[in-house]
Image (cartoon, rainbow, N blue to C red; front, side, top):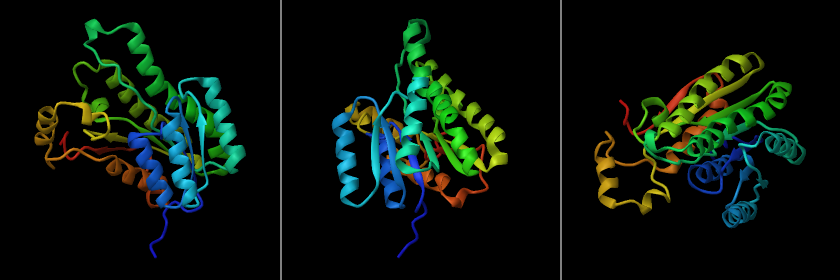
Length: 250
């Protein structure tokens, strides 16, 4: 029987009701972790996720919380610790896009994306840092994007938020490393989710053709890296950005 790499660990995943977050939750369950997760509006999918995992004996709890709200985040971290007794892995996955060319982008579109994608990372790490430091262990995983590395026309707000996550990740790694708290980022490329199913198939195929591995990524491809970074297999890795992009930016 294969070892479970996250056995005995408690993980909190933001935005886990769908897409990459949901795939990470399923991989973490398979690897033996107990799971807390946050959601804002997808209540039906949240309930479904809880039922699926409880049937298999997993300790799991969803918390309705807005990761971009500082006070709300403080409360949800305390609820997680009260419920599970500890916190070992934090996955900052919550994110949105509100794309437009810079000259057409509203201040509201800019602020919304920065708050949900970037400020949420600050909120969650700030709220959980004391627990990690008290335990003298912890792994923080921030979901960035190749757009944060390269930039992308029509996504200046999204690119800025994801680039900010990279700088934030490296700074947190430097600050908390002496307490054995690690912080890394994952930068996914073109990942095929429910959202891409709505796009023109010819456009999607053209994106695939431009990738060295000639395919789009799956949410599970990102989830596998999240398992590695959350586990003791990566105990000497911090401050790094791992691109999961099929060679897109090579």
